[in-house]
Length: 125
Image (cartoon, rainbow, N blue to C red; front, side, top):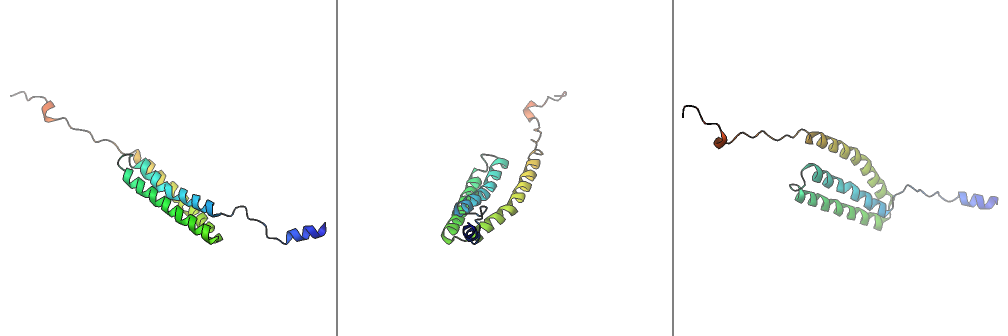
C-alpha cells in the first residue's frame, strides 16, 4: 500500500486550469468578437454594418490562427498568452463600453427651424 502511494506521488499533478487548443481558440474568438459587438451596438445598426462585419471577420481570423498555433505546437505558452490577453483586454473593453454608453445618452436631435413657407405672414403685406 505504501509503495503505490509513493509511486503516485512521483507523477506531476494535472493542471486543470491549463488551456488546451480548443480553449485558446474559443477565448481568442470571444476577445476578437467584442469590438465588433460594441461597434454594432453603439454606432447604429445600419450605419456600422460593413465595419462590424470586417471587425467580426478579423476576430474570427485571429481566433483561427491562435487555434492552429495552439493545436500544432501543443505549447503551454499559447494558453498563458491568451489568458494574459484576456486579463488585459477585459478591463479595457469594460471601460470602452461604459464610455460609449455614457456618451450615447448625450446625443440629442437638433431643433429644426420652421420652414419659410410655414412662417406667419408679416402684417404690412
